[in-house]
Image (cartoon, rainbow, N blue to C red):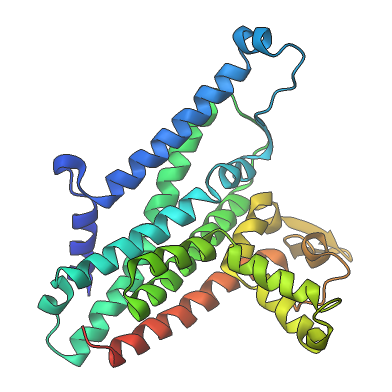
Length: 303
């Protein structure tokens, strides 16, 4: 498995001609962030003031914390890039018969597909680290400011939560890719999962149980719970930054993170726990579920 993962990493990072997907998606991120910096500098210039006198600055450059800034700059594009990279890599290996060439037995098959799950996690970590480096440089160049700097616990908690939930989305994308082996469907599903489209649809269904879909009212708590425990929802909650991993006083003691009501509100019917812990558990749970699905597909489908 380790050799297969090394081979995967080598192929996505091939420098010659920048043919590896890491360079292609990395350059895309660089272009997006460069355009963001250019826009920020432009709206602060006298030229913008002369073109639109009295117009408020349309670009937000003040953030409550460093991790809130990181989440704002990468919360949508980084998960999408990782999911697309994983799908592209998986389907390419199936189409060019690379997967068939490295498989010889059922045990080898499980090792191969298990390696793809681990590879998705390694790739997720690499892309999150790349995003941190790029947007930190953007903050310095563009003059972005933070009201507070996160504590080490808050920074680490945010990073781990952000990473494992992106990993979970990547493995879910693998499930679709291996189950369908259809490129358009795999990319569309990856888009819908990573950007929260699926979570929004389920949330809308739960909301509709109070109106036109009243017959589904008994399962509303289950629907709201499903939404609350989706990786895309956790990434949305992590947009508040690492404060959910800080310490707060409670009844004379200390509790980990924010209160659930701070995130979900008092009217929520979902089963939730401390948001910081829930963000971590959500990623772990979905990685486990999606990994089991990938391995089940590996046992059943021909390569």
